[in-house]
Length: 231
Image (cartoon, rainbow, N blue to C red; front, side, top):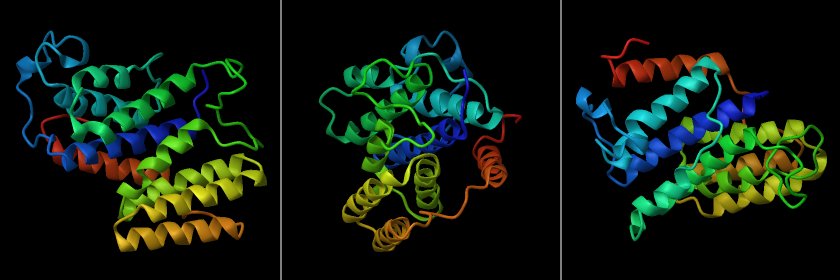
């Protein structure tokens, strides 16, 4: 299996988005779990912790460790299917469920063969004139980001632009403008519109991604939040 920078970056971005959504809906815990909670916890932590706790303390840590170590992702992910059962009837969970489903699609796409169906498009191919399906999922949450997190998200579209043919530019512009129209934060809205204009003119959506700097910030943040863990 060959993993690209795209897979690691998107996994990291989705982990950040999931964390922010848990905080937004008041389901992020500032207190660590007792050590007993990690023993015989079962699938998705169902024996010893709430699903939201499993997402915070198990899933996000695993994803970020994979990204930091440039390791292998699981062969299959079914977070979205499990979330349907857990969050049934919970109106606050809509965005969280969407993010988990998008993470499923990203992980599962790594192990798919590109000929499953001519109507699906889940891979990133050099010179492709179509955007992968995951882009349309990611654009649905772009309006939730601000500041550095928004810049990181915008860098994603430069990956597609650099790998795809010029034919995808109008679609990227249209998606960015769609996201801008849904953005409540005025500064973020203008930044997304600026990115769309740049792409329309043949430029980049954001400044180039600095992997080493991003990993350094992640390790510092992780150490601050979990000082008892030895990284």
